[in-house]
Amino acid sequence: MLRRCLVSGVCFSVLLAFAAAGAHAQNGSGIFVTPVPNAPFRGVVEVQRSTVQKNGTVMDLKSTQVIARDSTGHVYTETRQWLPISSTAAPALLRVLMYDPQQRVTTLLFPTRQLYRKIVLYRPPPMEPPDQTDASPAGANLPPSQFSKPEDLGTKEMDGLQVHGVRETQTIPASGGGQPIVVTDEYWYSDYLHINVVVKHNDPRWGSITSTVTQISQDDPDPSLFTIPDGYKPLSAMRAKQSK
Image 1 (cartoon, rainbow, N blue to C red):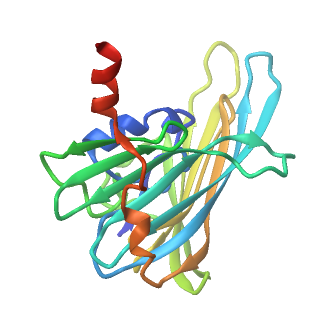
Image 2: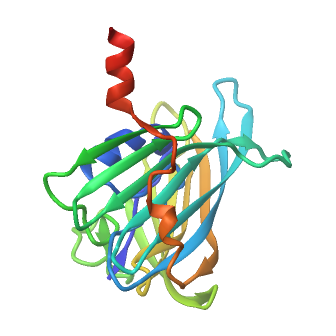
């Protein structure tokens, strides 16, 4: 069974919604970091995004984001600035999301203001990426669709990990005398890490995004990565101070 996570151009703007609902790490890259224990890792997500503008031009952007998980299932994920594809600058760190599975607590860090916010979850997040599909020509147990076609891409090795791929092609019928629209989603899933290490989405109406987890280390990350840095203040206290 291949676990996948749908990607769209709006993922980047809904970090807070994900934090409150699931406390996982889908931070605009489309890479969902699950809070599973005994599978530590650290990696760098390289993201390339092409967005179709209203005037028909295409804007090419990129970002890099660190993601990590320790042996107890603690999750760390970053949201960084989008930069032009030609830029040589390092993207600025905008937000950090951490999740403690034992306490069911999500912590959001806002580095530019040195603030943090904690959210207690009423139920634990899923242990696999959402929206399951079987990487087989039969398309798993999903009902057959005349507009959607799954394709098993087989297995390969990435950064020492065995990954299994699937591509899903959706055809939107033509309307108004135009041509059919073909939307594709591709996922390469690691059973060991319980995450997709490659996610590709392409929709000719809006653009495309490709996320690849690179520089994967399977050692336990530094514990300090999952702690609130010194000098940070709670967001609630700051709001109370401003209201006086």
